[in-house]
Amino acid sequence: MIEGWFAADGPLAQAVPDFVARQAQARMARAVDQALERGELCLIEAGTGTGKTFAYLVPALVAERRVIVSTGTKNLQDQLFERDLPRLLDALRVPARTAMLKGRSNYLCLLRMKRAMQDGAGRLGPGRESALQQVESWSRATRRGEVSELGRVVEDDRLRFQITSTADNCLGARCPDFGNCFVIKSRRAAMAADLVVVNHHVLLSDVLLKEEGFGEILPGADAVIVDEAHQLPELASQFFGVRVSSRQLRDLGDDVLAAAAEQGDVPELVEVAQALAGPLIAWEGALARAGARMSLPAFLREQGAPATAEPLLEVVEPLVRVLDAVRERGAAFETLHQRGLRLLERLGLCFALDDAEHVRWVEPQGRGGAVHATPLDLGQGFSRVFAAHAGAWVLTSATLSAAGDFDHFRRQIGAPQAQALALESPFDYARQARLHLPQDLPEPSAPGYSEQVAALAQRLIEASGGGAFVLCTSHRALRIIAGLLRAKFGPRLYVQGEDDRARLVADFAARGDGVLVGTHSFWEGVDVKGRALRLVIIDKLPFSAPGDPVQDARIDALRQRGGQPFVEIQLPEAIVSLRQGAGRLIRDERDQGLLVLCDPRLRSKGYGRHMLAALPPMPQVDEAGAVAWLRKL
Image (tube, rainbow, N blue to C red):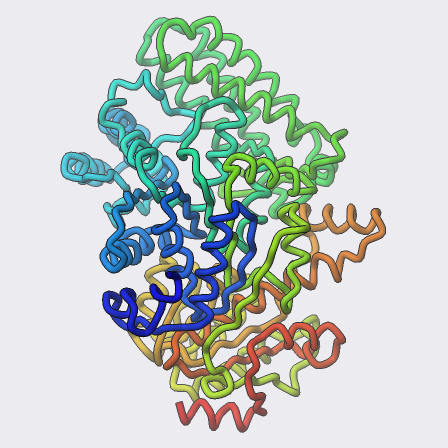
């Protein structure tokens, strides 16, 4: 049956424009179908161009099972639900009911919108009244209530925060607008669907809510399919751990003051809420002085008393006690009391330095930041995730292995016996692509390295006439390289951080001769087909930078157990990242381009051979050959 669906004369070929029958796609679909039938955990690496989206959606739709599909980004989620699923439902003619569910911060909260309108510019600041009016007008016409429909109106983070809810401040069934709540409507649709499209944040949040006794977001499922599964371990670190931010504490204080103002006769509550301001300002100042991620012990040594938990606990504990005394006065006070209790518990966990199973660290953000407690071993957390939906699990991505070796990913998810299948890309890289390894660049640590990369990039971009990505491994390199290229390419240059990511990519693709300089967020999830992208330059091998407290702690723990951190952690992760960046170049059977890997360690170090072997086979050319190839393109 699977062969028939994916045949050159099958229903997909007849119903889907530009459908190409691919042997690897049909093979992946059979593997997915088998995993669903047997209830197995299966890892599938499907090279770029395999058509993995259809390869997992078709078996999911015809399986007559309840299936959750989780994607890496909301953009891919929208694409699946609004483009791919309608095509397949029409082609296969199956009566499956589908739904899409995002995190609550993506949906308008009617109650918070009304409160924001009552406050006017008081809490939002001047000039936002007209934006609120646009939101209110849209709220009466929207069907799904997704704030992304508002476009640039909600790019103002403060406005967006005021018109959406969080798990902390949602009143749930006690809300006067509960019957019209967009979050509840979307969850009800998900509960009734045969196939639900979510993103990884929703998938992991659902597990946590179940464990904490707050119900569930997703329906029980017979199978879960995770696309872009290589992103799962890093996200899981955030969800399996505990975090308290200065924003959470500040918002608790603000919301307490707002509730007290509405009540009008709780002066003791106003007093304890206002007392939060001083210690919070001191803590935010300590975070700002830290300037970068660091371990909590190092932060405490450098910043002293303002960095400790005691000043915060001394004001949050009285605030929670007073909220407990007044919580019978209304749902708002009850919700605030529960928020305060959870923050107290999390603060205690984050500052419990005697716990050896977690790494404690701080992260400055904006004018404040957060303290984290992240588990060293993710395996137990993933066991809970898999147990939450105890049927089949299919984890797929273009990059799960290091040159065909899945062991690192298996260790990350705590599933050493998971079945794995690797499918190569169907693209003809020998015909479509060339690889250039520059011969005359110094070691990446040498002074002036980024300047020399920029000079090489300029020569190659001039030969290609544009259509270039320059992917950097650090923000410092980005600033240097972008600054040097700007003088030459001016308005054709697009730089990460100067506009919204999606708009940068769209403008770059539409122009056709642009040059885009970006860091890690552009190494994956960017799909530019055709002549608009014909040159990808990567400045260095993407090894994780030393100094990341979580990575450093995991490396130390592995070394103490007698392991080899470079071989077991750093090299496999760098290979996966390199494959992701290189994968931006060829996105279609008709694409052609040049990949440039500037780092000389690919030739001078033994591990360089392993990294090159992990890439698709491409003919190597010297700089003269690279220039000739680009001019030909």
